[in-house]
Amino acid sequence: MTTIKSILYPTDFSEHSQVAVPLAIDLAKRYDTELHCLHVVDTNHEFFMQSGIVAPMIAQPITGEALVAEAQKRMDDFVTQHLSEAGNSVRKSVIEGNPFEQIIRFVRDRQIGLLVMGTHGHSALASMLLGSVAEKVIRKAPCPVLSIRHPGHVFKAP
Image 1 (cartoon, rainbow, N blue to C red):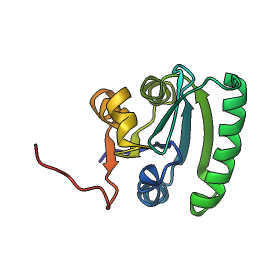
Image 2: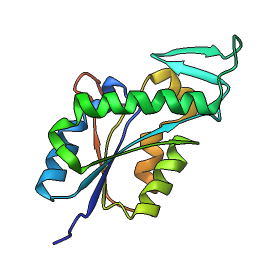
Image 3: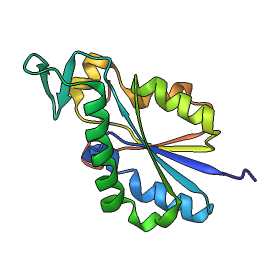
């Protein structure tokens, strides 16, 4: 039997990514392992995407440091609100870069044994423009990946 020594739950703080939280917590408890919660601040794009709205960042420039600081606050709130059941096993990380690349690097560097994530993030529009982070992670991750679909997302056959 495979022993899972650590689990990664990457999040963009969206409702769609939160569907994976209960399973990530349950598995961390069952395997008595650390649960890593990761958010990647994508500072490589000139567009800010939130809830399907794409707006050029033309007003006042926002530094990468400011985005990371804000994301760190959101991470603290997120873990308190959604991952408190996991207890002290939660390890929070906020990093900058391309989300797909940083998730894969995080898994490799920390020898993560299992990745648990939602299949969709902020919006369908963001996926069309940037590609699906979850899809890329599932294809390239060096460990097993459990992808959880939001119950409200309807699959449409091609």
